[in-house]
Image 1 (cartoon, rainbow, N blue to C red):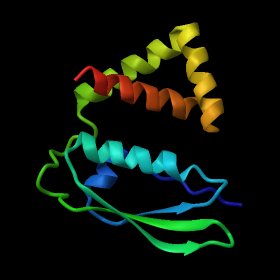
Image 2 (cartoon, helix red, strand yellow):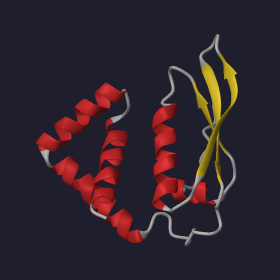
Image 3 (tube, rainbow, N blue to C red):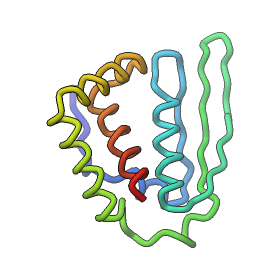
Image 4 (cartoon, one colour):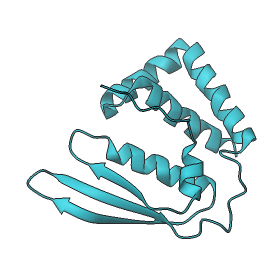
Length: 133
C-alpha cells in the first residue's frame, strides 16, 4: 500500500482560498471538532462562513457538510496564521505539556471528547491564545 505525502498547509490558508470545504460526518468521525476548527480559523481571519448539509443518509447516520467562505479575498493578509498568534499558540502548547496538572486536565477533556491528546492540546492552546487578545 502506498502512502500519500503532501506538504503541510495551515487551515487558515485552506479557508482563505474561498473554495468549498466538504466534511464527511458519521458517528465514528470527529466532524464537529473539524467544523469548529474551520469556524475558529474563519473567525480568526474575519471571514464569514456559510455551512450547509448537501447530503444526508439517515440509515447510515452520515452527512456531507459543505463550508464556503463568503468573503475570501477582502480580509486575507497572506499570513497563515499570523506569526504573533502562532508564537502564542506554541507558547501555550509548551506550557500545557510542561505543567503536569494542566496536562492531566487536558487529557481528561480529550478522553471525554474522544479525540487525541495532541488535538485537545492544540484546541486548548488556540483558545488560550485567543483569550489573550
